Length: 271
Image (cartoon, rainbow, N blue to C red; front, side, top):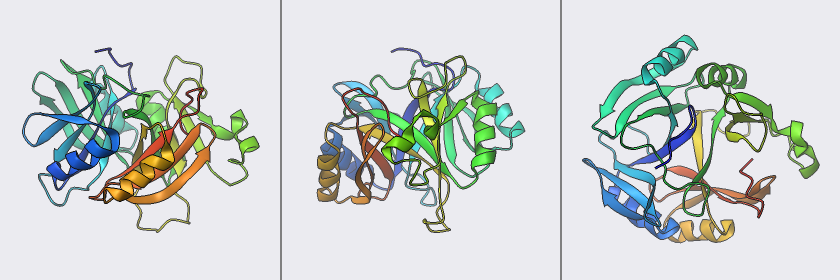
């Protein structure tokens, strides 16, 4: 399994009230197969390669949601930077057997994310291909504080989408405020972006919290959205074109929100 660079998205999992129902939904939607993990946890595989995990919620007060994890070589130091940058540490570093060490935190806007210091498990064995993770973005109302936070904690270099001619495709004119993140030591821009930040506008309910939206690559966005509905899910944002493919925002049959992306032939990532 290839190692992940510092601060790269390296894993996703979803907390669900009904683990077996989750296996049925995602198994049908993405063609995933599953193997038992430790406790109420099931690894998801695509073509025999690790792509995600499903977990049964141990506390009904926990959100039914997908979570993203960022790789770190020194989880203790990263947790310290989170506190210094104005974030909140939800779960201090805890060892997950020989697999690695994890922690959970929230940025200044309240979006929750995880940290992963690899042991025997690095993270994804497959990504950016149909049936696997391809992108993540934080959706927030506090863009200035959040931009500074991720730049300080992870060393991300931000590039605003309209700096690369997004306006020509209609994005800038529609008022979309989007920033792409590139890792430290890379040339900032779409080719090196590993994630991004978008803004929750007044068009959304005031009670909507900040959150990370994770994307999974699919061969056909329209078909995936229709299939999700037939499986008992819902469409939060119908399929539409963005500069880097065709996307839809969906909910599974238990309420967890995620997105699907049909990349263009060039393979560029989502908005």
